[in-house]
Image (cartoon, rainbow, N blue to C red; front, side, top):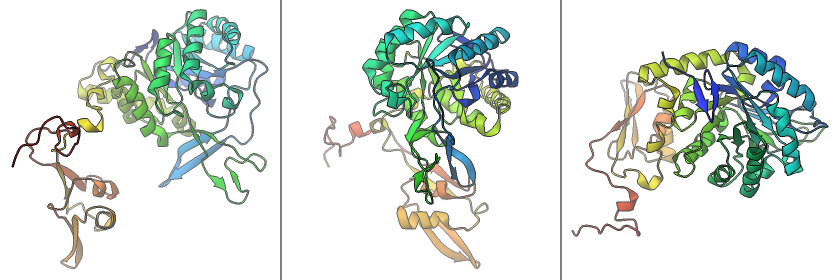
Length: 426
């Protein structure tokens, strides 16, 4: 069977599945239940200075899509609202009883050297395996010049990371905010500061919806609302892009990555791994379905690795990165045509409507033996694959690659005004 154990920046765990710093890791009771269920590690909910913060009620908003509840989750909860000493004692107790699991402690204190110098030895004394610098929280704490207010300024990221490397022996994971134009800038800053790894993405600034009776953003707190942090399945595409950007860029590719953002099952996990992650952090899926989901994640990932012939997580990490390229490196000669499986077709006409109204008029509609019949017009089909996406029947519409000779990218195309290869005469 595949070996799922990992070593990221010197932090070891029996499998790559960690609970992210969030409500599920806010206290010893929860964390013990998670580790008993099989999680490889946890990132303890962010610690801060005393006196602790005060949280509000309510705290969560959610988006639904196509019958799925919590397709996206918005939260306005802050860091831990429990005293620092209580958290530290519980972390120490858990690590003592689960020495083989990764116990990482998320930290957020003011952007003052003395504050970091003071808290780091206290965390180190617990026996924790590493720390995660919370430079991502986009609400509440950012208004106090912490969280994403730090993560959006590369100079601050580098400065605080350097402080932490100076005052602790523990591996330092820098958690990056997605609320930024170019994720490479804070990643490079973390690297300059001596960070041992990065984790991403943290939550995305959002207003999840508006209560049209209260006339306030949701969740509504006594008639008012605020922006929060968006997570869950809906943010997975954004997370994969940012993670892959760091993994494929030469100078930042040396950074080990803990992947976060909408991981809900083994397939999501595999996608994050092949895009460059080594460890995987999960939050919303655990909040939705409970800690036992890790069993399916472990079994599914292990079975997939066995089928593919991958023996270790290291064999998987980054496999897709060589094929993650800029648009101008794609082959413009490559062509696919849509093909409709008439036996599987339920005659709903969604492919025809989508193509006729919004695409390339490449699907014909006729009556055949008294039934609607849809066929692809090959001469008009550009292979955009919209029809395959709108079709409600899996694999009813497939995209068939056509014979092609050679490769021609935009860099070599004669329509490119910057093309350095002269067009052939005639």
